[in-house]
Image 1: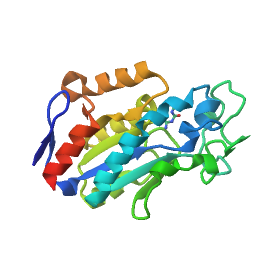
Image 2: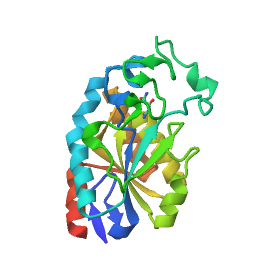
Image 3: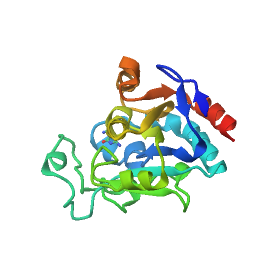
Length: 224
Ligand code: TIU
């Protein structure tokens, strides 16, 4: 067993066979101009800051052959999996399914919907496509994790208060021990990122733990 220094208290990692890294939605649609994030009115450039840290985490998991799960938010080309409430929300010029500079906005298989090249999944890594904010909604993520005997999840990706937090809450309710890597997640709103970190670890870790990538890397070193 390894203890990873975290808040509100140390995170216990029983052994390396029980942990997976979940990288949420590091897609061009959220990180590059011309995608869904910008269509919603956001400055997408600030999300780029976490890419090198996230790459270090990926490398550490890859070096140890630990499971990595990438998620992708996107919809079928006929948008049959996109509820009207999501399709019609917002007042931007481009909506989900419209053609933008990176292809159709938030549609699976379009250039803009892909994971950014710097963090591209390797062939043996799992990719979960999801129509919602949470990665457990309308996906087989839970059965994949149960089949692998995974009990501990480390979370990174974007955006902290939307898809990352929603997925952590879904995972927490399903009994997974959830750790958010603070410097490997980002939001369009710094104050929302900070609030999310604090609300996750408040009340004795009501949703889970938070820590730094450095602490995770040190923990992985100890586990072998
Ligand atoms: N808009 C926003 O902050 N996020 C999303 O729409 N999806 C994810 O967080 N991936």
